[in-house]
Figure (cartoon, rainbow, N blue to C red):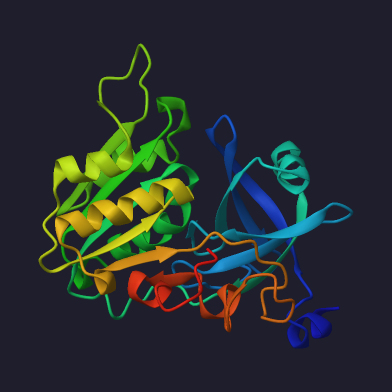
Length: 276
Protein backbone atom coordinates (compact mmCIF):
# COMPACT_ATOMS: atom_id res chain seq x y z
CA UNK A 1 0.00 0.00 0.00
CA UNK A 2 2.78 2.42 0.94
CA UNK A 3 4.62 1.71 -2.30
CA UNK A 4 1.45 2.18 -4.34
CA UNK A 5 0.84 5.54 -2.67
CA UNK A 6 4.30 6.73 -3.64
CA UNK A 7 3.81 6.04 -7.37
CA UNK A 8 0.09 6.82 -7.78
CA UNK A 9 -0.87 10.45 -7.01
CA UNK A 10 -4.55 9.47 -6.71
CA UNK A 11 -3.99 7.12 -3.76
CA UNK A 12 -4.48 8.93 -0.43
CA UNK A 13 -2.39 8.46 2.67
CA UNK A 14 -4.04 7.41 5.89
CA UNK A 15 -4.41 10.39 8.18
CA UNK A 16 -5.93 11.06 11.56
CA UNK A 17 -7.77 14.07 12.97
CA UNK A 18 -5.89 15.12 16.10
CA UNK A 19 -7.72 18.38 16.89
CA UNK A 20 -10.98 20.07 15.89
CA UNK A 21 -11.56 23.82 16.37
CA UNK A 22 -15.10 25.25 16.16
CA UNK A 23 -14.63 28.49 14.20
CA UNK A 24 -18.27 29.42 13.50
CA UNK A 25 -21.63 27.62 13.61
CA UNK A 26 -20.82 26.04 10.20
CA UNK A 27 -17.00 26.10 9.96
CA UNK A 28 -14.56 23.83 11.75
CA UNK A 29 -10.76 23.62 11.44
CA UNK A 30 -9.35 20.09 11.39
CA UNK A 31 -5.75 19.38 12.40
CA UNK A 32 -4.56 16.27 10.53
CA UNK A 33 -1.44 14.18 10.83
CA UNK A 34 -0.26 10.71 9.77
CA UNK A 35 1.61 7.93 11.54
CA UNK A 36 4.86 9.38 10.16
CA UNK A 37 4.00 13.02 10.90
CA UNK A 38 2.80 15.82 8.62
CA UNK A 39 1.22 14.33 5.45
CA UNK A 40 3.28 16.66 3.22
CA UNK A 41 4.70 20.19 3.31
CA UNK A 42 2.63 22.56 1.15
CA UNK A 43 3.35 26.09 0.01
CA UNK A 44 0.89 28.73 1.21
CA UNK A 45 -2.21 28.59 -0.99
CA UNK A 46 -1.83 24.95 -2.02
CA UNK A 47 -4.62 22.41 -1.58
CA UNK A 48 -5.28 18.97 -0.15
CA UNK A 49 -7.76 16.28 -1.17
CA UNK A 50 -9.47 14.95 1.95
CA UNK A 51 -11.61 11.80 1.98
CA UNK A 52 -13.80 9.72 4.25
CA UNK A 53 -14.27 6.04 3.46
CA UNK A 54 -17.76 5.27 2.09
CA UNK A 55 -18.59 8.99 1.88
CA UNK A 56 -16.34 10.66 -0.69
CA UNK A 57 -13.51 13.13 -1.14
CA UNK A 58 -13.13 16.81 -1.98
CA UNK A 59 -10.46 19.46 -2.36
CA UNK A 60 -9.89 21.95 0.44
CA UNK A 61 -7.55 24.86 1.06
CA UNK A 62 -4.80 24.27 3.59
CA UNK A 63 -5.18 27.16 6.00
CA UNK A 64 -2.03 26.59 8.05
CA UNK A 65 0.45 23.95 9.13
CA UNK A 66 2.61 22.95 12.04
CA UNK A 67 5.71 20.76 12.30
CA UNK A 68 3.59 17.59 12.49
CA UNK A 69 0.18 18.49 11.07
CA UNK A 70 -1.86 20.33 8.43
CA UNK A 71 -4.90 22.53 9.17
CA UNK A 72 -7.97 22.54 6.91
CA UNK A 73 -10.90 24.90 7.64
CA UNK A 74 -14.07 23.35 6.24
CA UNK A 75 -17.54 24.87 5.87
CA UNK A 76 -20.55 22.58 6.19
CA UNK A 77 -22.14 22.57 2.75
CA UNK A 78 -22.88 18.95 1.70
CA UNK A 79 -22.68 15.22 2.38
CA UNK A 80 -18.89 14.95 2.87
CA UNK A 81 -18.58 18.13 4.90
CA UNK A 82 -21.62 17.11 6.98
CA UNK A 83 -19.85 13.83 7.77
CA UNK A 84 -16.61 15.65 8.62
CA UNK A 85 -18.46 17.98 10.97
CA UNK A 86 -19.80 14.91 12.77
CA UNK A 87 -16.29 13.41 13.10
CA UNK A 88 -14.43 13.39 16.39
CA UNK A 89 -10.75 13.67 17.25
CA UNK A 90 -9.08 10.36 16.43
CA UNK A 91 -11.17 9.85 13.25
CA UNK A 92 -9.26 8.24 10.35
CA UNK A 93 -9.31 10.14 7.04
CA UNK A 94 -7.63 9.89 3.64
CA UNK A 95 -5.44 12.78 2.51
CA UNK A 96 -3.41 13.43 -0.65
CA UNK A 97 -1.58 16.40 -2.08
CA UNK A 98 -0.30 19.05 -2.21
CA UNK A 99 -2.06 20.41 -5.30
CA UNK A 100 -1.93 23.72 -7.12
CA UNK A 101 0.68 26.41 -7.51
CA UNK A 102 0.41 28.30 -4.21
CA UNK A 103 1.09 31.99 -3.60
CA UNK A 104 4.27 33.46 -5.18
CA UNK A 105 6.12 33.84 -1.88
CA UNK A 106 9.46 34.64 -3.54
CA UNK A 107 7.99 37.38 -5.78
CA UNK A 108 6.23 38.95 -2.78
CA UNK A 109 9.41 39.37 -0.74
CA UNK A 110 10.14 42.97 0.20
CA UNK A 111 6.62 44.17 -0.63
CA UNK A 112 3.85 45.52 1.57
CA UNK A 113 0.96 43.07 1.50
CA UNK A 114 -2.75 43.84 1.76
CA UNK A 115 -4.95 40.85 2.59
CA UNK A 116 -8.69 41.14 1.94
CA UNK A 117 -10.88 38.24 3.02
CA UNK A 118 -14.53 37.44 3.45
CA UNK A 119 -16.11 34.55 5.36
CA UNK A 120 -14.42 31.19 4.83
CA UNK A 121 -12.34 32.89 2.11
CA UNK A 122 -9.88 33.86 4.83
CA UNK A 123 -8.82 30.19 5.02
CA UNK A 124 -6.37 30.13 2.05
CA UNK A 125 -5.25 33.71 2.74
CA UNK A 126 -4.44 32.76 6.34
CA UNK A 127 -1.83 30.28 5.08
CA UNK A 128 0.09 33.16 3.46
CA UNK A 129 -0.42 35.51 6.42
CA UNK A 130 1.06 32.92 8.79
CA UNK A 131 3.92 32.23 6.36
CA UNK A 132 4.76 35.96 6.23
CA UNK A 133 4.67 36.15 10.02
CA UNK A 134 6.96 33.12 10.25
CA UNK A 135 9.37 34.78 7.78
CA UNK A 136 8.70 38.30 9.07
CA UNK A 137 12.03 39.79 7.97
CA UNK A 138 11.30 39.00 4.30
CA UNK A 139 8.09 41.01 3.95
CA UNK A 140 6.99 44.60 4.46
CA UNK A 141 3.88 45.90 6.20
CA UNK A 142 1.03 43.42 6.57
CA UNK A 143 -2.53 44.79 6.47
CA UNK A 144 -5.46 42.41 6.95
CA UNK A 145 -9.00 43.54 6.12
CA UNK A 146 -11.62 40.91 6.85
CA UNK A 147 -15.39 40.67 7.10
CA UNK A 148 -18.20 38.21 7.67
CA UNK A 149 -21.98 38.30 7.82
CA UNK A 150 -22.14 38.55 11.62
CA UNK A 151 -19.81 38.39 14.65
CA UNK A 152 -20.64 34.69 15.01
CA UNK A 153 -19.51 34.07 11.40
CA UNK A 154 -16.00 35.50 11.89
CA UNK A 155 -13.44 32.73 11.32
CA UNK A 156 -10.10 32.49 13.17
CA UNK A 157 -11.13 34.94 15.92
CA UNK A 158 -8.02 34.20 18.00
CA UNK A 159 -5.80 35.27 15.09
CA UNK A 160 -7.92 38.33 14.25
CA UNK A 161 -8.17 39.75 17.76
CA UNK A 162 -5.16 38.31 19.63
CA UNK A 163 -2.35 36.87 17.52
CA UNK A 164 -2.08 39.02 14.39
CA UNK A 165 -2.51 42.48 16.01
CA UNK A 166 0.53 41.67 18.19
CA UNK A 167 2.79 41.05 15.18
CA UNK A 168 5.24 43.85 14.44
CA UNK A 169 4.20 46.12 11.55
CA UNK A 170 0.87 44.34 11.10
CA UNK A 171 -2.60 45.95 11.05
CA UNK A 172 -5.95 44.17 11.29
CA UNK A 173 -9.35 45.72 10.45
CA UNK A 174 -12.55 43.71 10.87
CA UNK A 175 -16.11 44.39 9.78
CA UNK A 176 -19.41 42.52 9.86
CA UNK A 177 -22.43 43.01 7.64
CA UNK A 178 -24.64 43.29 10.69
CA UNK A 179 -23.53 43.39 14.33
CA UNK A 180 -25.27 42.03 17.40
CA UNK A 181 -25.85 43.40 20.89
CA UNK A 182 -22.23 42.74 21.89
CA UNK A 183 -20.50 43.96 18.71
CA UNK A 184 -18.61 47.26 19.04
CA UNK A 185 -16.67 47.10 15.79
CA UNK A 186 -17.31 48.28 12.25
CA UNK A 187 -20.48 47.36 10.38
CA UNK A 188 -20.68 47.25 6.59
CA UNK A 189 -19.70 45.20 3.57
CA UNK A 190 -16.05 44.43 2.84
CA UNK A 191 -15.74 46.35 -0.48
CA UNK A 192 -17.11 49.57 1.05
CA UNK A 193 -14.88 49.06 4.10
CA UNK A 194 -11.83 48.76 1.83
CA UNK A 195 -12.72 52.04 0.10
CA UNK A 196 -13.28 53.71 3.48
CA UNK A 197 -9.85 52.57 4.72
CA UNK A 198 -8.30 53.62 1.38
CA UNK A 199 -5.07 51.54 1.36
CA UNK A 200 -2.54 53.32 -0.86
CA UNK A 201 -1.49 51.07 -3.78
CA UNK A 202 2.12 52.33 -3.81
CA UNK A 203 4.45 49.40 -3.21
CA UNK A 204 1.61 47.03 -2.32
CA UNK A 205 0.28 43.73 -3.56
CA UNK A 206 -3.30 42.85 -2.62
CA UNK A 207 -4.36 39.25 -1.98
CA UNK A 208 -8.10 38.63 -1.82
CA UNK A 209 -10.42 35.67 -1.39
CA UNK A 210 -14.04 35.34 -0.39
CA UNK A 211 -17.51 34.80 -1.81
CA UNK A 212 -17.64 35.50 -5.58
CA UNK A 213 -19.93 38.50 -5.10
CA UNK A 214 -17.49 39.99 -2.58
CA UNK A 215 -14.53 39.45 -4.90
CA UNK A 216 -16.43 41.07 -7.79
CA UNK A 217 -17.00 44.28 -5.83
CA UNK A 218 -13.61 44.23 -4.10
CA UNK A 219 -11.96 44.20 -7.53
CA UNK A 220 -14.03 47.23 -8.52
CA UNK A 221 -12.99 48.96 -5.31
CA UNK A 222 -9.32 48.16 -5.91
CA UNK A 223 -9.56 49.66 -9.39
CA UNK A 224 -11.06 52.84 -7.92
CA UNK A 225 -8.15 53.01 -5.46
CA UNK A 226 -5.63 52.79 -8.30
CA UNK A 227 -4.44 49.18 -8.03
CA UNK A 228 -3.17 47.68 -11.29
CA UNK A 229 -4.18 44.18 -12.45
CA UNK A 230 -0.75 42.75 -11.67
CA UNK A 231 -0.99 44.11 -8.09
CA UNK A 232 -4.02 41.93 -7.30
CA UNK A 233 -3.86 38.20 -6.53
CA UNK A 234 -6.79 35.92 -5.85
CA UNK A 235 -7.33 32.21 -5.37
CA UNK A 236 -10.22 30.53 -7.16
CA UNK A 237 -12.68 28.32 -5.33
CA UNK A 238 -13.64 26.30 -8.38
CA UNK A 239 -14.85 22.73 -7.98
CA UNK A 240 -11.82 20.46 -8.44
CA UNK A 241 -12.03 16.69 -8.64
CA UNK A 242 -8.85 14.76 -9.48
CA UNK A 243 -6.24 17.36 -8.58
CA UNK A 244 -3.84 16.29 -11.35
CA UNK A 245 -5.39 17.83 -14.48
CA UNK A 246 -6.96 14.63 -15.82
CA UNK A 247 -10.72 14.95 -15.28
CA UNK A 248 -11.25 18.43 -16.79
CA UNK A 249 -13.63 19.44 -14.02
CA UNK A 250 -11.84 22.69 -13.26
CA UNK A 251 -10.52 23.82 -16.62
CA UNK A 252 -10.81 27.43 -17.83
CA UNK A 253 -10.04 27.21 -21.53
CA UNK A 254 -6.70 25.41 -21.71
CA UNK A 255 -5.91 26.17 -18.05
CA UNK A 256 -6.51 23.71 -15.22
CA UNK A 257 -7.16 25.40 -11.88
CA UNK A 258 -5.80 22.40 -9.97
CA UNK A 259 -2.48 22.60 -11.86
CA UNK A 260 -2.06 26.20 -13.07
CA UNK A 261 -3.95 27.72 -10.10
CA UNK A 262 -5.71 28.15 -7.81
CA UNK A 263 -3.65 31.34 -7.36
CA UNK A 264 -3.83 33.87 -10.21
CA UNK A 265 -3.16 37.56 -10.63
CA UNK A 266 -6.06 39.59 -11.97
CA UNK A 267 -3.96 40.20 -15.09
CA UNK A 268 -3.74 36.42 -15.64
CA UNK A 269 -7.47 35.91 -15.05
CA UNK A 270 -8.32 38.50 -17.67
CA UNK A 271 -6.49 36.33 -20.23
CA UNK A 272 -8.78 33.35 -19.47
CA UNK A 273 -12.40 32.67 -20.51
CA UNK A 274 -14.81 34.38 -18.13
CA UNK A 275 -16.07 31.11 -16.66
CA UNK A 276 -15.02 31.65 -13.06
